[in-house]
Each structure stands twice: as C-alpha cells, then as structure tokens.
Length: 399
Image (cartoon, rainbow, N blue to C red; front, side, top):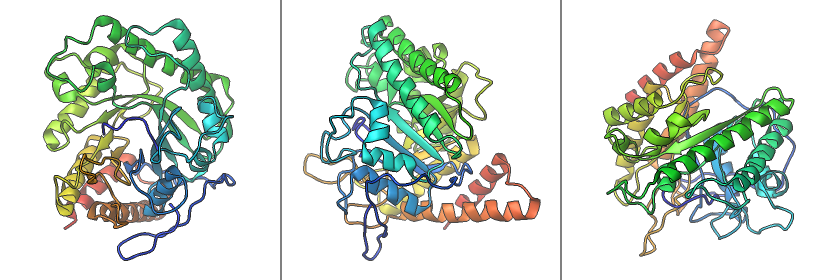
C-alpha cells in the first residue's frame, strides 16, 4: 500500500497461531527450492508488530516459508534500519550500497539464502539522484552501477540454486505524480515522463549487462516496473501504463491492483490493457504482467469477507495467466491515527492466523499434491496452463 519502501519469525505458540524459529545469521545455501510456479504468494514490508526478537524481515520471511510459499517479496534501500518496523535492527557502517546490503547485512543475507524459488525486491540504490526533473547522467551512472552490482552478486552467489530474482520498485504512478492526486494530470510534465523512462531503461540495461557479464547457470535475475493507476489509464489519462511503459524495455510489469481488485471483469481488463502497452520481448517467457499487490483491510471487511474477496482475486489472476498474485501482506504495516491496525494481514497483531492465511496454506498443500500426483502419473510436471485451470477449479470449490 502507500507506506513506501520500508521492509522489514522466531517462536510463536498459541491457539490459532503458527510456530517456527528464526535468527538473523546467514546459513549454508539451501538445497534447490521447490521451483514450480504456484502464482499465489505474499510479501513483507514495514511490519507494525512482531512476536520474536529476530529482525522483522527474518521473522516474517520465516512465517511465509512456514505457511508453505516458495515466493518472497520485500524491499532493499538505504532505510533498511531506519525505524523499528524496518528490515534490520541496526545500520552497519560497512553497508554503503545495495550489494553490501545483500552480502554483508545479516538479515538480508539470511532471507536471500532461504529456500524461496522466487524473490521479488523493491531495489532502491543508496546513490543520490532522482528523475522528476529529468534523469541526470551522474545519477544514472551511480544508480545503474548499484543495480548492476546487486544483479551480478545474485547471479554469482546463487548460481546453480534454481532461484529467480526480480528487481523492481514501488507503485510507479505515485512516483510520477505529486502526492496522491488523481484529479488532474497537469502536474506531470513531459520531462518527468522522460525521466522515468530513462530511469527504467537504465535499470533494465544494468540487469541485462549483469546477465551478459556474469557466468551463471540455474539462476535468473529480471527487472520490472510497477504501475498502480490502471483504471484511469484505461480512460486515456497520463499514467505510467500509457506514457512510460511503451517507451521502456522492462522484462516484467507488476500491477498494484487496488483500483480494480474488487471486480473480476475490471481486473481482467486492466491486466490485458497493461499487456497491450508492453513492447515485445521474445527473450522473456510467458505472461509478463503480474499482480504485485492486492488486499482488503480488516477495518473495512470481516475476516470471512477478506478471505472471499482475496480468493476472487486469486482466481482472476490464475485464469488470466499472471506469473504472480501477491497478497498485501503477511503482517499488517498500516496503523491509523487512533493506533488501530488497518488489518492488511495474514497473521494479525495477536498472532492469530486469519481465514485468508488458511486459504493460502491449504492452497500450497493442494498445489504440491497436484504437482506430485501429475508428475507420478505422467512422468513430468504438469504444464503451467493445466495447473492454472486446476487451481481455479480448486479455489472455486472451496466452501
């Protein structure tokens, strides 16, 4: 949601909660992760509470693993230890760039080493410079070097593990606009649009160059952009979808889908519309648009309704062919002025698993069983499209 690029288990044991153990130390590389693309997943940013003394990033990542997911999304930036809800508990003098953060900061290295097959990262370089008045050559060079160095580190370090990494950013339409004002497009001058195009293309080139320059096998690093105002884009308004994506060369696009998530038909139309704006990229397999955020706060919905609406988004994403549909989020990150948790959660601030958590957990159990039984019966894993169809049927049959 709108709490920006701050990422943030330990042991928990009470009725209706889960139990696990967490620590921040980097361990040995895991065995090859379960790499089947289950599509459904979640993420962790700025958790507003925790239940252990581990770094919040580690605690929440362990909770996501314990639920059964093979997908993690979190953030990396200079603010990695800026608040109690941030990824790590303290900043380190030796961490001066994104590669340092991945390699030397214990909490980040710990989660990168975990057995997630798919890791999505909001990657914001420490180097100064922004593009709203045009992207300067100095800023482009410094920030591109950080993205390049991070991508090289991931390709080299995790070669042979079967892991895939996606480097992206938070809701791009709020970057393009001043504040959260959608009443007018007047505050988006052409220089700002071009600045964002240049920014995204510089990030893409950094990832492309890293893949070219770094010997690797059994690991991938991709680059993505994120859009979030697609409903007004479909009205012809000035947006990242209409004005930036057609000039950008990104591998993938994430859609933070709050503006259409409540209606399956509108959400499907939005995904198709985003896809129509992407320049072709033959080297990237499958659909290139995914749902990077969706969620329904408990302050507006009962736990049962929260689960029902989430299943609806899951079915829509699977039917359309999204590579990911990521629920916002494992622990809630938003607290209102009265101190109430808004309830964007799978596990609430009392440690209770919500109905939507149980849907995720049961989904992973069903999905792994489906893949195993199909593989045993046919001698090969199911085709992705066959899996999607079966998953839609399974979710639709849930009471």
